[in-house]
Length: 99
Image 1 (cartoon, rainbow, N blue to C red):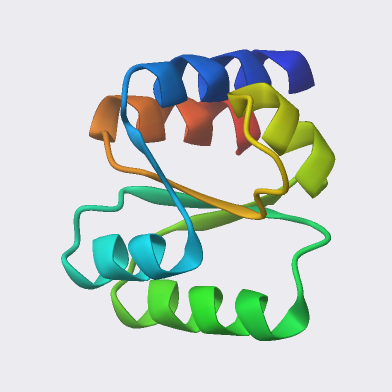
Image 2: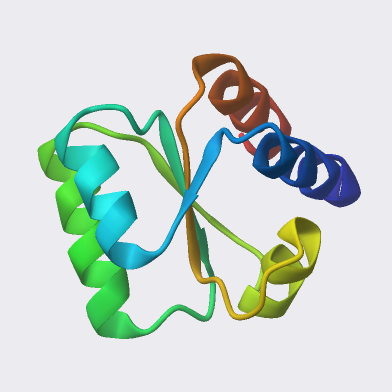
């Protein structure tokens, strides 16, 4: 099950349906384009609070997933702690795999 969502994460990234970087993710949340936010379980407390509070305010679902190394490896980028999924189809599939 775990590898399924990581494979899907890599596919979503290659399809251009992921947004990386704290500022870009916050912008997507504010514009309601983000459908789901994935947070690494070892994200810093300030970043976690900022992103989860913003998700709650704009009613964007978020999920705490594996550590930063695991999700970074899945998308081929180093040290990523948060990823916003901006496609409803991918977001629904992630919810079914992780929920």
